[in-house]
Image (cartoon, rainbow, N blue to C red):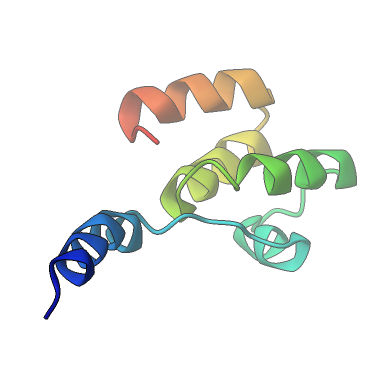
Length: 83
């Protein structure tokens, strides 16, 4: 195995473990058990999911479904789970 190949594998490994969300509208809707998210909230979460993990988005959806704002849900989730 060439040296370049080893460094490439080491660089890609953490990304795969982190598992970025990049969710679509239907998958975000499936996390919303009470169907309380508006279409605008779903679009905002979809854009937000490009930078955060699936667990982060799930927790935010749960919090937003129970009435907290996007910013409050994001701050709490960052404290508890991180990115």
